[in-house]
Amino acid sequence: MALVSAFTIIRCLALFHITLAYFFLTSPKTIADQNIVFLLGQSMRLDIPPGFTTPNAVTAFLAIILAFLGISDLTAVSLPDEYARIYWGTQVPVRLLFLFGITGYTYIFKEGGILAPKNYRGGVGDHLKNAIVFTWGFVELSVWFWVFISLRDERRQKGMELIEKRKKEAENFSS
Image (cartoon, rainbow, N blue to C red; front, side):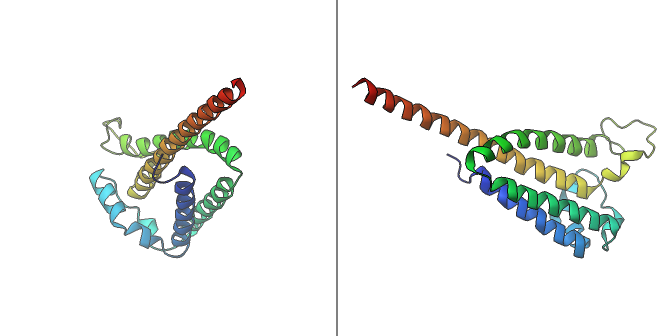
């Protein structure tokens, strides 16, 4: 059995989203100045965008999206156990696929990236290729993968318990 349940991890991540929403609304520079953003950004040769020094319309919109995501995840994780397992069993792989795409795109197609053309010119998705997006995607990807592994382990454990229960019922019925 996992040390921390998948639903506990999801609750913590939802509260993290709400906390991020607060900081994006009030002081986005606090997020941009975090060591993990600097470390991952520098190691991947991604810059921190200058628009994150003061609150603006973009950071306010981002705060609303993160708050909405956090509140909806808290609501979904509070469903009855059977429904929550079905919901998160379908949600987690979709989120992993999306986050893997965003994180990979941010790194691979950056200027000087593995798949970036030699005569690189700015394009539509250039605003996604920065340290904050990469750090967010990387951390989210790591946590959602942890949730995926925990859900799979919990599902296996429930299956084993069900098998044991049915064996005992079969033994009781035959005797």
